[in-house]
Length: 173
Image (cartoon, rainbow, N blue to C red; front, side, top):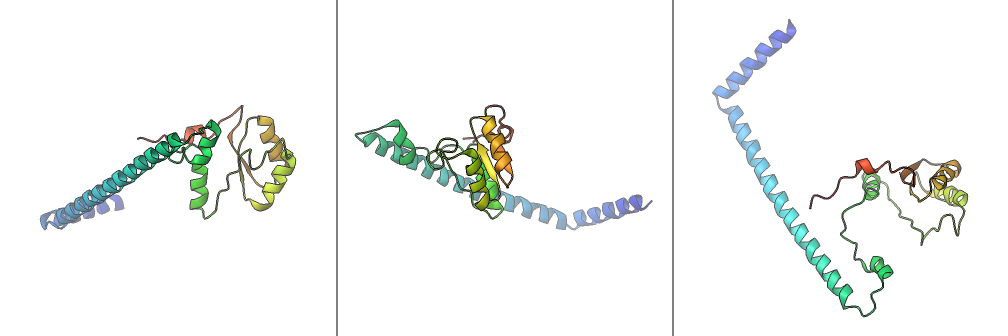
């Protein structure tokens, strides 16, 4: 019975608001604010995209102007600075939103499994990190890391599984 009364009261209030144009005024104001927000965000996107394209072209020209263009130097030169984000980069965004700081370690920094045992690497990282997001070639490396780490280990890629692939949203541009 109370649902019926609530419905009638709501219906009566909406009719009253529609009669004195308050509801229509609020609706028009909301539409205007939405249009302004859409216009300004589109302008900001266009400016950001133009800056991105001009920066890419500048870096490309600088790269092509070098006399010695070795393929391995391209990463240090900044050629991939504006590539679409990979699934792994979304972990960085999430960590930053939670107030943390993501540290990226690749084979040149860590050399896990060759210069340092996986056991030692996992124990060392566990001392100064709250979690490990591992992108490894061999699933056994991931299993060993989970065994010796004292913090959670998240599998972002191995030779058996790619659990984060379904979460990846490609760049629409």
